[in-house]
Length: 161
Length: 208
Image (tube, rainbow over all chains, first blue to last red; front, side):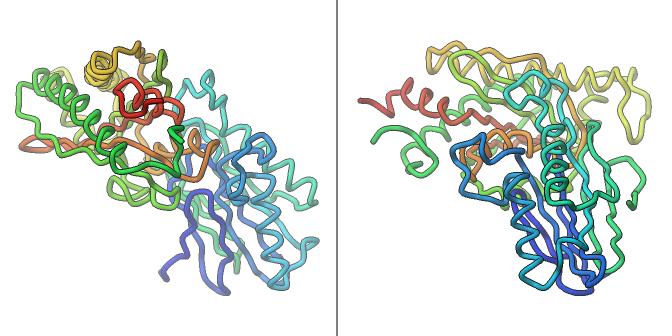
């Protein structure tokens, strides 16, 4: 298999034509895969936190659900994709440790997923599929050509959504 | 000018933090060695200021499966401490401690084995924190431990997210330890940003 483009934590990238794009070890973060269903252009964002407005240090717009998804859409549109044709698939947002429930992190995984869904709804981009929540990490691979979003977890079968 | 932030981490701060790791992890390694009745070697701690995109690179890559025992730190400083073992090491360690009780298990650990691993984490992180507490004369309390066995990237995203609220880098004190055979693991002390300042103040590095 060809080498996949790698997206880091709090990072986002467009996928070159005909290739695949990946992000490794999503925990409470959410991997948002967007695709223009006509041009087959796509991109992937690794979202870390739900809300840029809740935090003063918010220069890195790729880190947050609200600003990160918008930025990915903007980059895709600059390459000729149309927002009205875009669809989304999302994965991640796990709770890696039980007591994240009552720490300052307050279940950040769930809040990340909710924030991603909210911004996608605002932007009228439908979510075709998701694999979110629970308590395990995920590595995702996205192939915009086919729209296939592959999810790998430790000790679990590989899934394609 | 003495306020501690991620932009002004200088070499003196790094040296002091490294020494904190050295003493803390040294004590932890000693209690691990006592528990296992074996020799445990420890590397010089690394104090690393990592960009989020570099977190992948530590501990053998984001997809390296690790057992992570995570405790929240409360009291005069706040943050977290983590004890990470490669999966094989974790299994070997549990087997060594439980003797014949442990079944010849492959893959997923059973409840008893997980509980044992948590307790190991509990004991050795306590010795880490106790020495830190004695050194700084601060009250440092750890929560009950929780365990997850998963990809390193997913485990490390937990402290990374906490730092993500303050900036785009993660500052951690990392110590690698090994024994003669199969054991390979890490201690990770990740105080939150205000706690770094408190630590450096308690040790007289930051004064005003």
